[in-house]
Image (tube, rainbow, N blue to C red; front, side, top):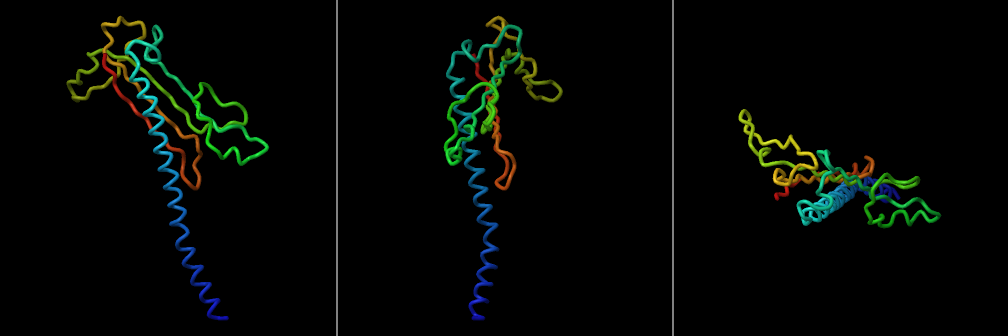
Length: 177
């Protein structure tokens, strides 16, 4: 009987020593999955915008505006009588606007488009750094607009907890005329 108690105690100590490793592994897998998903969301939106003509659709700024910002969310469905359904795959459609009552934001995608002329690529004489800090407003004559800066930011809506916080990623590219 004493041997069984000692063996149980030894096994309990070993199990308690291994438990943090298992929990860290679950957290790492969750964070890795979310990092991959945010990268896919950002790159797929970026690729669709880069395939568009330079002066059409969402790459065109409103007259006088120096940027075009679009915010979309992907939400978990509202709770129902069967809570197990809430844990299934989230609504795969991105939609503009904030979530309705009972919905939780799983992902938020912010897309920002700005336009520049070639003169913005001239490096600063003192620092040698090129800064795109003088965007051209919408309505500028086409011959002066040479670059479009497209930035896509994906923010995970999961609050910080035992598995960490939601992942965020920002991808920025220049599209030349």
